[in-house]
Length: 386
Image (cartoon, rainbow, N blue to C red; front, side):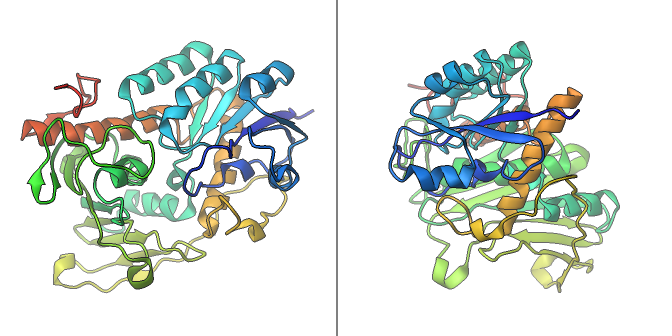
């Protein structure tokens, strides 16, 4: 007899926040899954919200739910990094595994605490870095490993470069790009960086006002270059105000350049995500012709109902199918990871590494030199002088 999974969703709509990734729908219509609880301090429009999650019962708080239910998995939907430690501690104390929205936290010491807690309690934490589950990036990784563009040389990553460009873009959206770089290339060895505000290098006490509560942030322009194994370089860049939705679509994306060509994917707002390849040996700045790469579905969940794509574009669910699909495979992977006593493909140590790379950017800028990983200092570089 197969195991019956009990899942609880924590999505507190009493806290205003920008768009989410749709984690609350990740476990819909998966085989042997029962969504037993929907936690939301805001009881308004509850029938509609519970219809999206498929939950059987509503609770106002996480402690109330944990006292009444015994879920195997708790889904944490908040995109505010300051929310997660307390929620994870409560779920872990109840023996629950976790699917958590990014960013994991804004504090590297908190991230260390969460990693240690997961090991101590024997729980698995899957992180919502959907690129690791997306067909487009799985294909990109396979093509890199197969030598389709020769030896990888440099991976270029751009944040959204909108009104949050710089420090806020780095933690809110850059975490996806940095995690993808490690997914494709491995763990970074070192970084150097430049962070400026109004053309002036930021200093330790500088802060940038942010749209959301994301912890310390500074700068309206960030350039960072990571050193990866084998001499591969990884660039991340974000500049405020480069992006205009009506004119540009989004600038966010990632391109890997090699000795025999390049692979590229841009996070546009279309229904699909397109992988493109250039098979030219000429550097991109001299002009390169790209063609689309056919994507062949290799992700299978036996017994799952077809995805309901009509959810795309509903409140807190992105328009792109990419997220709905990646969430489902993340949920499935978490269940298999629990069964097989392994880590999920996107796990808490990966999320901690992305945050450590963010800390490394600020540390390298303030040190005016190369900073090596792992970081010895775990306090935020922008706060160390305070």
